[in-house]
Structures are given as C-alpha cells and as structure tokens.
Length: 250
Ligand SMILES: Nc1ncnc2c1ncn2[C@@H]1O[C@H](COP(=O)(O)OP(=O)(O)OP(=O)(O)O)[C@@H](O)[C@H]1O
Image 1 (cartoon, protein in one colour):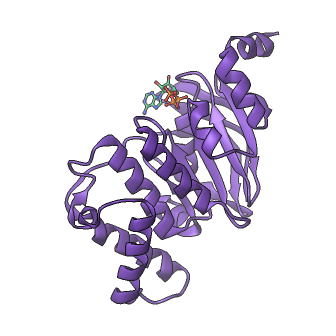
Image 2 (cartoon, protein in one colour; image 1 turned 180 degrees about the vertical axis):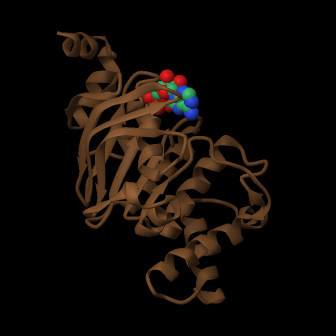
C-alpha cells in the first residue's frame, strides 16, 4: 500500500530524514516510536503533503502511485489521511459542516453523489455515540474551545466518517485520560481492517496495549534504527532508547 524508499527530507536547510525506508501493507498497523526530534512527525507530514518540507531524494508510492506527483488534496482523495498533532481550530466553521464537506469531497472523487442529509445524520449520530461524544460537538466550531481530549476524539471521529485507506495518527494518545484512551483506542481498532493501513506515531507503550501494532519501528536521527513487533515497544518502555542509540552507532 505505502512504500517509502531511502527518503531524505530537509527543513530550512537541515536534513531531518536521512534515508528512511518503510513498507506498510494493507491490513497492518505500524507504530513509529523514537526520541524527540528524530523525525517522526516529519515523516507523516511529508506523506500527507505538508509543504514546508523539501524532499531531496528517495521515493514514496501509495498504491503504486508516486505521491510527489499528487498535491495535498489529491493525496487525501486517494485515501491518505493525517490527523493533526495539535488539531487546528477553524473559528466559525461548524464541525458537522466540515465533516460533511470532507465526506462529500471523498465521494465525489469516487464518482458518488453527495450523501443525502438523513443518511449523513444517521452515520454521524452512530459514530458520535461510538466515540462517546456529545452531539452538541457537531454544532460547535471545529475544535474551538475543545479540550485536548475532545480534540483527539474528534480526530478519530473524522477518521471513522472518512474511512481513509491509510490513517496516520500523530501522538493521538497525548493528554488523554484513561477513559478517553480506551474510547480512542476502540475507535482506532474499529478502523483496523484488511483494506486499511494505520500509522501511529506515539511516545508511549500504553496506547499499544490497547491497539496492538503488527510492526514497531524506532526512528533515530532520521532513519529507522530498529524494527520489531509489539514486544519491541514493551522493551523500549523498560529500557529506554540508549541501547538502540548504542547499537546504531556501532
Ligand atoms: N517546520 C520546521 N521548521 C524547522 N525545523 C523543523 C520543522 N519541522 C521539524 N523541524 C525539525 O526537525 C526535527 C524533527 O522534528 P519532528 O517533529 O519530525 O520530530 P519528532 O520525532 O516528531 O519529535 P517529537 O517526539 O518531539 O514530537 C526537529 O529538530 C525539528 O525542530
């Protein structure tokens, strides 16, 4: 589904990703962990198409298509969706309208017509209940005045409505209370499926107790220094990153 090969990326003249390769197949959940500043968010931002990053070499293909030939909207329409690390506020735009507009844009790309209003409301009510959110969220401006945990639930709500092929979630677990962590994890698990890939950027093992990844990668200084399964995340929790830094320096 997604193939990243020997990717080099710079921001403002500094090289941040230094030869990163990663393959995500449909049906897999990948977790990216690693020390602060190692390039985790840069990777998901480059895949999603954020513009401040300069790709100096390497390639990324999504379902066989070169994504560097697709702008940010085309990537979203193709099914690549990045939740925001700090979900943005859009004053004056109601959540419900944004969700509907985004869903209709996706349907249009699939050659489908606009979703009929009653069908949309039924869908949204079902997803809101699943995420244990209050329906008043729909009438509020996007993320305006939402608590940190509410923004994260909203991010998952968007994913549940839009059903991307590749869902990328950056630090979805930061700032969640225990109950919200369970609800958000339940939402992510419900996205799992044989047609969908999920990329989770996280600092903590805790999320991965609820959403057990198929693959865990440790990003160090712009490269994947080690990959493993869910046990690797548990090992990192107890041992930290020093041993990996030492291994990759050797
Ligand atoms: N827009 C930008 N302008 C300047 N430097 C940037 C920009 N984006 C990222 N960087 C730099 O790139 C490096 C990698 O950042 P990135 O956010 O990808 O790391 P991270 O692994 O996600 O870190 P964290 O764990 O702290 O979230 C950092 O040194 C950061 O300062």
